[in-house]
Length: 471
Ligand SMILES: Nc1ncnc2c1ncn2[C@@H]1O[C@H](COP(=O)(O)OP(=O)(O)OP(=O)(O)O)[C@@H](O)[C@H]1O
Ligand SMILES: [Mg+2]
Image (cartoon, rainbow, N blue to C red):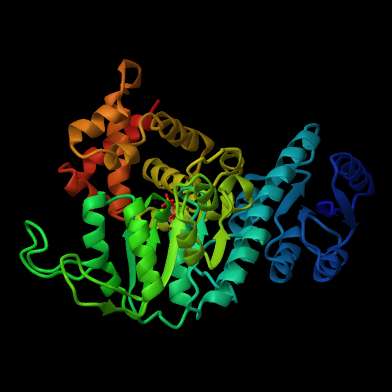
């Protein structure tokens, strides 16, 4: 990476020398200019970095130069330097969009270090956002999948070649890495996009129901089958069938699925008629499916049928550059949804975010941002607000609500497996919040709908959240 650039604009040689010395020893690359004209020339030649600008220059005022700099390089944060700061001047400078304002004096040096560091953080964030925008409007094959990480972008790029193919795609990746976003993106980008996208969750449905869910059933096939019902395979005709959590598919259904993929036909449960459908199959798993094949948990022949084109999504911790960009993206979305006007994260909060492990990947980051948006009061998310939200999230890691809702059959059984002993009993508040989050997820983050399914008011939900983060 090249050194970070600073342009110092001042007509006083001693000050230039002093600032340059400090900034160089702080590790920056310093360019200087003694007049407004010189400064503009540098900027117009493509300078991108932080600009320290004297308020009074021989050929113009700093404010005049500031406007001209802005016009040719809107991204570069400008810090004003002045001999005698008046309040008016400070107000004026921030009103026009200066990044900061420093008075010449004994503590110039220490204030400068902080201001410059913050300015570079802001610049980095804006560059990332810009990057994101151009990739979204440009040739990005997955407009819903936000990433600025070159390796991840390459992975998405390779998927472009399967958009219009019938080849089955297997998407592997940890929970919350965006497998479903990618699956939907493949469907949307291909020539089946006018057909349906139908998802089957192979983990969420008991084995006995999964077969009829997939293939449908005939009237009278079993008790309760009062009329014929089409399954997901039929529903996906001319479109895409998404087999989510395919690694959880029971052995009996693995065999059945294999037959369907070989013959391209199937029968409804309790039926004899052969039905053939035109579908494209995309599957996803958070397991290492090949490893499952080695261990004898997944059929090898089925693996090859499903993984004609395998792809693996990177966990968020391996692409930390995506964290600020995703955070800003979710901030914007949830701020709008909550009717708030939150514009950004404080740079320190951004650093804090980047230092988090995020075992739940993008989904965890998204939940965290949604939470902090709800409790935030100002235009900028402060480190304190973020820490509050983080605390509540960590507390929530007690029982996996997902496992609680999935495993076993009766509620009593599910509870017993989630809380096997005294030590596993969690504070009810944390559980409440975790349960509520799960509900939110199921209702696509719609707080009103989730609240209504939980049979509580919106206000109650807000209180849970702010109680949790209030300490
Ligand atoms: N790169 C991304 N850009 C924008 N949103 C994303 C991205 N990755 C994930 N998300 C969001 O994060 C959440 C989780 O994503 P998704 O459901 O696709 O993950 P998953 O890999 O299928 O997780 P799981 O294995 O737990 O089902 C969704 O709300 C999704 O919109
Ligand atoms: Mg998923």
